[in-house]
Amino acid sequence: MLSIAIFLVPVLSDVLTYPMILGRQISDALRVFSRKQVFNEAVVSYAGEAYLCQRLAWMRGVSVKRAIIAVKDQTLI
Image (cartoon, rainbow, N blue to C red; front, side, top):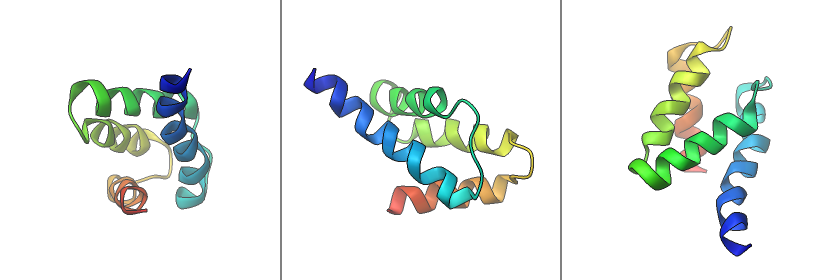
């Protein structure tokens, strides 16, 4: 149970903070941020951020530059 909580806390914080940073909702946010967390934990650190930049850049109205800035800001927070 504790391992599930440890996995979900960063996911839920991302679900809550990224819409504030971007000013818009992210479709399938729980799935996207769960996958980001799996990439960071299982593959290599910050691989999830690269995946997230790609997913954010696919959103209408979000440029690659804005996606990278959003990920950088969230990582610093």
